[in-house]
Length: 177
Image (tube, rainbow, N blue to C red; front, side, top):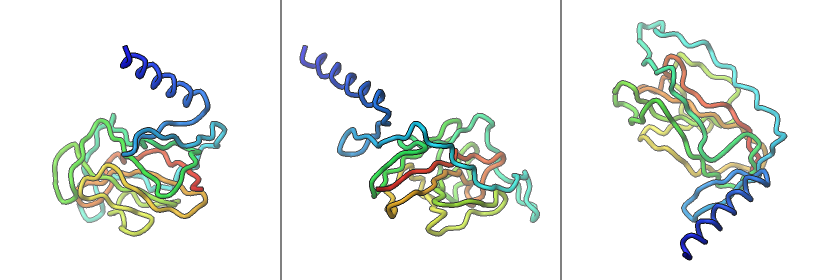
């Protein structure tokens, strides 16, 4: 009977969080939530070159299924968070494989931080704005300075080149307190 009460209490807490306009986040310490701004304006998309199936040098880009989706599991546009920011990557319709591994239907994650434009027909650079997860990681604890930051996920092939069509998340804005 106490198990049922615990379940009901957890459900009530989840409903209360949803009702107060907050989004729940999972972390190693259990449940927490980030303040969401339901009135947040949509973040403008980054300027991305049109994807081509074959690059100028003859490289055939890895084809992505049309149903592939890349998204943030625990963050949404307008979230207010503390640093370090835990970012969990979500992917459906494809699998994850480390960089350097050529396997159909797979790729690896790249997190774009404060990037306003990028080339869908070139390897993604590796720097503080273009974070690579070539070992197949699906989350990161990210140190960000206080203020607003934009985040976007992009799936890359074994050579860090975006798939065709490009598999990317929406670009979101978060505020770090």
